[in-house]
Amino acid sequence: MKKMICALGALLLLCGCSGKPTGPAEVQFFAMDTVMTVTVYDEDMEQAEAAARAVQTEMNRLDKLWSRTDPHSDISNINAHAGDGAAVEVSSDTGLLLTNANTAARESGGAFNPVMAPVMDAWGFTREKHAVPSQAELDALLALTEDLPEVTLNQGQTTASVSLTKEGQSLDAGAIAKGVAAYKAMGVLSGYDVDFAWFALGGNITACGAKPDGSDFRVAVKDPRNTEEHLCILSLEPYKSCSTSGGYERYFEENGRRYHHIIDPADGYPADSGLLSVTVVSEDAPWADAYSTACFVMGAEKALEFWRSNEGAARYLDLILVTEEGHVYVTEGLEEGFEFKGEEKGYTYEIVRR
Ligand code: AMP
Ligand code: MG
Image 1 (cartoon, rainbow, N blue to C red):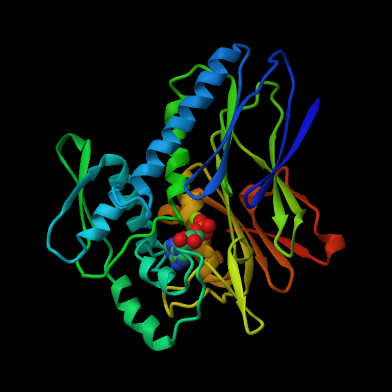
Image 2: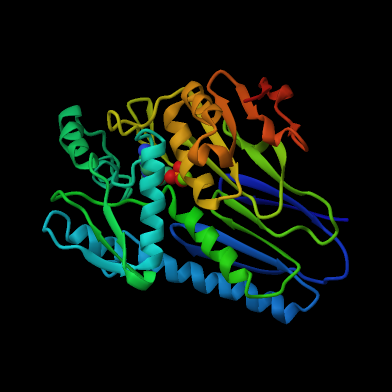
């Protein structure tokens, strides 16, 4: 059996594939501010390559729609009309992105917030010109994060109308866009009759189907204290997605303090919830992405309470929460095939049940 170990975004990936195919076909490219890798297995290599390229084309299309820096994107268009009373007509894909974002915002009790862009800008994360804003500046900007975008899917559902009600409001879909993109990519792949595929969109990994040899598709979660190493390995069931959020992914340091890119909408500061990283596994790729960010903001206690509620999106999630003290909470749906690698690194773990 051939074994590949690839370092990809926030996760490491272990995939053993055997059998007839000589492939896989693999494309790697940069989109949505991250490196994306699409790997497709099929006996017919031409088919596998065509499928991988089709996913790449889809990612580039969605990147153009959702970019904050492209002035012609749907997101820029909506932001440009914030507070002027006009609803902007956008692609139904943008409608899908924002309805998912609004649901995540509501169900997470505001831990997930898709209109954090002004706060992200104040911290300088958008243009990598970092600065620590004053609390007064943050308080003024937080007033712009209170109202969610208004989204209406238009007749025929090929377009959507979106408006931001307050001047100065601005969308940042960075915490969910790759999850929705993974969902769209699965749709593209279903049009090609290939054996198996997986994609890694930064820290979001999706298993598209079951491995032809029947073995588990294995994903390794990074040690957030030392991202060169694994903390644990888990089995990703067919069509499930896995997403990791961690403060170590993007940060800057000033006067000996570290400021990372996941912001607590309650105070506008980098979330200080006691967690180093959160991994979410779900059959719903957008939820995996949105809730890895949201649970990072919530902290272990609230995140587990949310998971135990087993309501709404929480029904479709399993979590791995890594605390600053080095404790790892793993929810019961991930128990089978779970391999802990953290003992020697001073971590402990427990399986959490509903
Ligand atoms: P992720 O890597 O999926 O956890 O997403 C992190 C990104 O989401 C950040 O770089 C910001 O662009 C954005 N973001 C930061 N804080 C939040 C938040 N509380 N809710 C939603 N998006 C956020
Ligand atoms: Mg996310």
